[in-house]
Image (cartoon, rainbow, N blue to C red; front, side, top):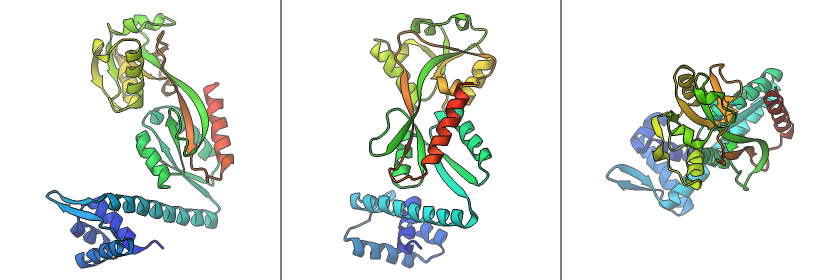
Length: 294
């Protein structure tokens, strides 16, 4: 149903090559060139410039590509919804952050799918900026976002999360109900990578308190929260992670608040204003709160 010229445009942009796009689309290279020339004539712009490294979209071309992605996503969603209607089922494409891979959100979605056999859920994990791009192009129906939501979208506050110290239970600090940030300077720390929101929030809190991350003994950086927790379970390491990622944590872990560091943030469900299934949103919110209250 989607214009073949737009499919060609997106494939050329993805592969960065007319030749490779032609191979993948089972077209001749002249046919690919003709599709793009037709688009340029229709839109009155130049889409790509040739560079020493291949082709690069012009500013106008980037706009066209952005909307072509949106159109392609809408057609995919249309096909999916028509199929759902025919087969009496519902499908959701849901975006989550890397933090959400290790907290209750996956479990909540699995519980919902178990309770509703007619539902199919597909999950895409990405950085927050990329999730918003996918929402904008309708590549996903909704997303679980850490932090304040973009006002361009509708949102539901799911939880207020806090960063905490995560330690092996045999660590002497684990016996404290509250630890000082100075205590962490003597520990071997494993933190998430510098691109993560968790790391940035911890670093901002330190800076607000006149401290620098360079004052701490960070021996390793890992993006996967589950791996960090596994390492701490078996070694005398310490990390700073979202409390939500530690619900139902392993018995060898201790979760201890850090005094005088403001490290709270919202967790929101963010969705386009035309998302219509509010019953789905209400139920997954209810399941989430039931699980954290256990």
